Image 1: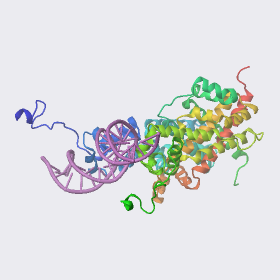
Image 2: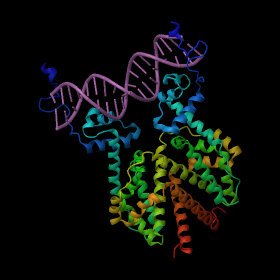
Image 3: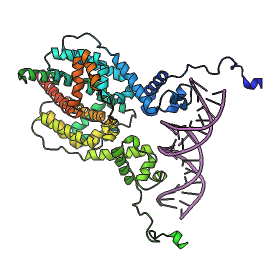
Length: 235
Length: 235
DNA sequence: ACCTGAACACCGTTCAAGT
DNA sequence: ACCTGAACACCGTTCAAGT
């Protein structure tokens, strides 16, 4: 009975598996960790419990539902956005400032690629949380001659471009069978330019194209600024 | 026994519930219907069976797994892309042709907003399926003076922009609590331009901004063309 | 106060059984 | 040949029970 009640690794004084007590914060952090590692679809209350050394049902003492866990994770990410700062001081060139902003935001997205859909549903709160990050970029545009409305459109367009693009890249988790050489050949036979395009998919992967798209957007905004300056709207 | 074996609505000659026999095609079409109506996440073999008046297990005679059903739906969508045609003849203005292409593709995306992630994972096959649709747009760009590589980048950039944007919009299914007036006020106090931006979210919804972004992209491409013409690469 | 086991209604899938 | 019921390992969640 002695040997049964307590093996050599179990004593009366130390619980068999000492672990920090459960609390809301530890639960949410574990959830974000699971999402980052395995994706939102793999998050389950049972797995989350296991990650914390506890039965799934124990979580319900701290959190009313799985939906609430996801809300909490969203808030965790907003807190992270609130810590975003412009990566460097204004350069004096609005194009450069916009690139810096876009890349800093892109890097923030890449920290939690599997959780991007969480802040897609709450853009207004995302902008509000990161207000200190966006204000200088907007100010630089206004200083460069953009009307406030146009500055806002410019920042929204660039931010949405980055978020949407990162969301698209994150959606491509299941790497699928690419076209075979003979299939590409068949395309090329009738549609040479599309054949050229399909071949470019390997040479110029999403990452490079994302940067190209950013440059195209900024060039387009420069054009808008010039046009607006040539023919001002109100007075 | 007579009364038990056949009620007034049941005869020996007509089966109690005549329904077309199951087959792969009917299963895939029902699956796409369910996805369009309720989203990919709501698709289950049991629901799919119910939609077809059959137990879930019956489906496995025609389809090896749920994954295979999803593959089949993807193929259904590719078949639809293969039916895409340029909405109108080339206008003689590459900018206009590009807008026409982008809007036609956007409309195609909107036919199956909940299935967009399916062809995000197979871009090469999507382009190959819609080769007849893309070739004229590419040809128009080349005719306008774009190098083939640049024409390809231009079409990919615009197509990706539309797909990513539609994917982002589709991700916002759960409409969440927007910022309250006092919360916007708090943002405005310290960050007036971000406050302006947040207010613009209501006035200029995603749809309008998507069109603005498209125009900015095309303006940027015009700039690229002019630059390339001024300083040609090779020769 | 904190955790758990059993249960319920779901899920994908297998397999032996029905007609 | 075609469909189904029971079963298994999963899921979120409830509730009564354990310590």
